[in-house]
Image (tube, rainbow, N blue to C red; front, side, top):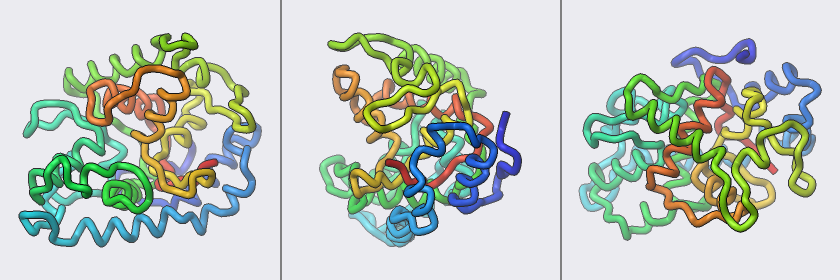
Length: 269
């Protein structure tokens, strides 16, 4: 059941307010309440500064084509950002495939602005100082408080979510782990961190609400960065950020939070 007061399409909410509603609705969730310090810091989340930098980049005319990103279509029309992030991944007719957010952003930076794959603007994907992270934080923030609604009408969207579910539960690697090893039950921990349960959508919406400032990293991180970290922790083979496997996992992650409000940007341990 979705949290009462979740925003409808086009209705923005402050990420601090979104988090507080989740906390109020789940007073017994060890995962949601595990870091009093982070909750207190939310109004001064450093990711908000990263979003401001991203807004400047979005409207700045850049790259070999000296163009802004205002003509980029994230699924709701050229330049429409409100509600776009929470509806991804989705199928794009212009490329004939399902794309997650970062894939689509890089596509636009290449096609519209003329950047090459080796240019730092698109090659550097991680860290608060990277163009990708700044743009991601700004664009995602435009969907704060709106419900996760990854598209699932097109057969390829449905197939991507189904593939992501298979990957989520597929055991492998040196330790024979899968994603469910950590996220299949309530109350599990890695060291001091309480882990979210995937089947609890109100815990899971916070789990997948990236970009987020990671206090322990002193950087804003993305969904792609979290997948990379989880795969490494499970001792699986590395995963490429623009691969179908990566997109499938994001599709399933977001689908598991369907109907719940996104906290964008969040602040995590």
